[in-house]
Image (cartoon, rainbow, N blue to C red; front, side, top):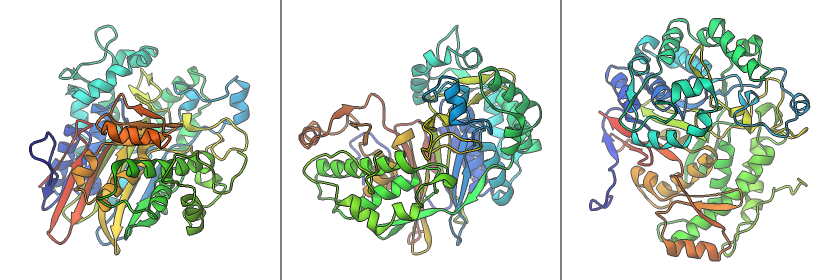
Length: 529
């Protein structure tokens, strides 16, 4: 139980259905659908469509999407809703333009968005209520305005310099001659409301064909992009059902989407940590150190080996094998921080996540993203659509698994998670925060399964992230712990903004309850009935 003398929130307890998102209006929209008899998929689509309006820096209809769906009594289903590069996009073509990497505001960072294709496939196969109902709240907020919440305002203000560089983005996303909306002020995106009405009526074709696609292609071409109407047409049915990957941690099966997502990195971290005692009595400095060392190893492999599934140099089974895990685990020292290496020794950010469990026990883990804050910051004035920049993850290195190529998917950071035990779903869970997400999955699960923390406690726990040669830590970590980590050789950096955000719902069958949590680092909440 949490300390009631300290600020915080309790884990939500609900007997029938629950939803947890990073925005209160999104949670409320999904809860209303659940109360009306909608299922988990319906609630997720209602919630994410609201988030595409009220958290415009985090997600949008021109983003990408990954889903893990566990129907009651069934197996976990994975849906890859990430978009592909234009057919003309090659390393050679982009190098000929003088590029050595893909700038995040470049048209070349914009792959054909995959979210709407995924939404429509998911709704067609598993939804129950009409899209007109599911998008109702999102359309109302887009057309009539919504109040900007505190965390959204904080993030929005930091993005002003980039938004100001694009005329379309500045017109829609900035107010009073160039500032971000403040907390409590209202903001509207009526053109997004119109787009959602069209999608509700005509499905994915309203986005990938006709006037909307023509306008997006024209805008991208004006920015130097290689996109064509054929590229967008190929995205119409671009979302794919794929076989989820999984590994066992402390007796629980952890499910992730396969590459091109980084879910395999989360499983690799857990595999390495599985060989160490991380119980409640382990000192915090040692816990953070071991997590950091496992993270460095997993991310090193991610950056060298993870790409579009059709271009993987090694199958995920190899990366998750007992042999690979043992080799990596041997490289973790309790006494000192070490540089990461590949097990074979060769030579060489912004997102929304939501969890739903409905009254029938269907569970969904759903993540939707435009990558950097406000994506590419390129907004098409005609359609009102802000374009993502997931293609910035591509490499311009010939022969690299994640090198840009025709109709290729980039390595993705966004990953939904699903926990199961003895063939039954235990918890949809996820962690937002760009590159942090794989490390965040491992830290959250270790908090619950190793430390015995409650769902909300595990979400609230102070975070650290070993990435790019630095161990970033939240300022809530005890200075004595940081001193010990420094003595182990870690280069410490105190985070200037919260690290990630999380949502999760635990299914307690013994007591007939759902236990849900939502991250206080965001504005959202968990609700149920």
